[in-house]
Length: 174
Image (tube, rainbow, N blue to C red; front, top):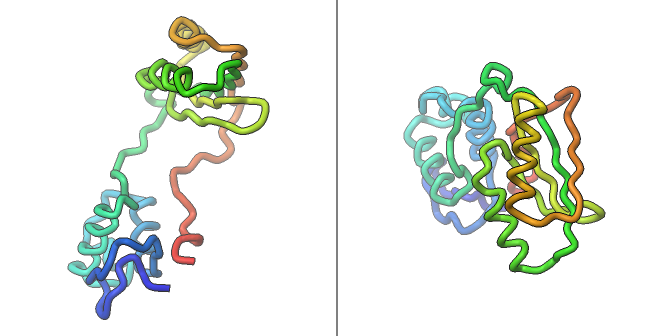
């Protein structure tokens, strides 16, 4: 299968229309997922390329939207938001207007990190971080003031057994 950045020489893109990635692309992405601050020389070394072709590939991966942004991962405990709460929401309204109101209601609440529309008994699953139960209660109060909900169930994480931002890359380029 041709690479996202296939060419006769590594690093020289022919097309970014394909979602296929080659081994160089996967090595670059794996290294950046571990540490987005790697200097291009170190990144190139880890990918098995020279710096210029590596830099070109990174640029093309960014242009293609595969690399959406580079961020810093912060320590939640040290920033006093060590409690993770999952908020399961059920609604009796399943229409586009309500969904848009829900999006607006939750989009600017900084404690809510993730929002998923679900299949099954739960309509939406939210992941939030807070310093304590009182702060969660205030978040809950804000939420129910903004949008009508049929049922809200909160589940507090007792232990974080695995949490990663690294996406598996073994499916890319199949």
